[in-house]
Length: 351
Ligand code: FUC
Image (cartoon, rainbow, N blue to C red):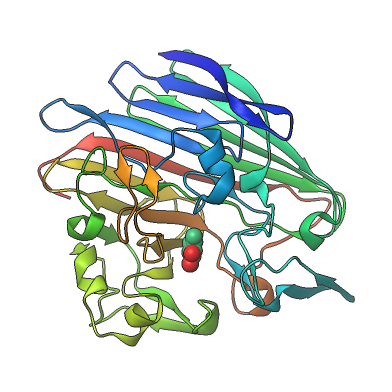
């Protein structure tokens, strides 16, 4: 196992470092101190060819300029908060609105845009990086000084574990996730339309035209949202289901998980035979199929296009603060926010 580090660039006079983690089985993961971005994951295909399986940029300037959250940790609260406002106890808070009249992915300069402190981690059977960031009381409009820690750990079983921790000095909201866009074809050879996705979920959240949950929890039965036996992404992209059409022909939906740490989500590319299995203790995974990816922007290895990557964002339910029947995303001063998601990379003949 190996970990190496170098200077990647600069943001507002702050140096940004990259860390590359390598295990003894040919998995290589690079992450940045800017936004805790996982800028690259490289693994072999069935013929042993090492290729990139995530979307990324080559330079810090590209990440700063206009990244659709490639690989980043998003927070304080992932997803949208309706009208950028909420009430905790008797206090109303107004957040920065960075998507029309709503607040998205932590605001104008959420955690994905911050330079984090990094400490390399070297264990006997794993290597990684621990990132910390202190989000000040009032940042983006949220109450409370929030201390956040995110750790990436890679081991020789080809598992990447992301663990999240947070503590606050005032009641606040926390819902963190990682926004990696997977493309298992290798070096973005093909869009993800023929990737197979399997999710152990019988329910998803209905969205409105602003992509906010309506509050309705819908059964996946007899819809393109039934991934329990595995289904290609293309079916949702080409479906006439109104929920698929609404989000730009595809998926941008929260699926409810059992939150029992079992294998809950799998993504598979039948051509390269690469597979990623994801397990989490979080109540949901937001599946976003890159429906809004800008066409013809230069990215690493080529140009971006619709459906070039798929995000599998494990997290609490979006906009939970406005839906009392969703599990709460509130964090109190005497509590610790904790979340864990594990990604296992393999070569397989089937999903
Ligand atoms: C995802 C989505 C959004 C979005 C974005 C970049 O998580 O839910 O709709 O456009 O990230």
